Length: 60
Image: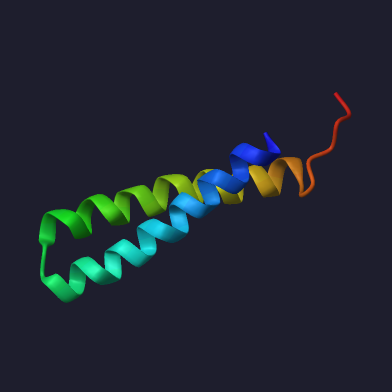
């Protein structure tokens, strides 16, 4: 889960970057999808850090 969290965090960061580029190009559909991806992947990453900690604990 640790590596998956890092990958999802990078996807969220790239979605935020894509959102800024979409604003510059005035592409509304791209803004919507980039914001959606940033919220979903960023929320998953933050929830994983909150509930499992970083690095995640291995105690069941």
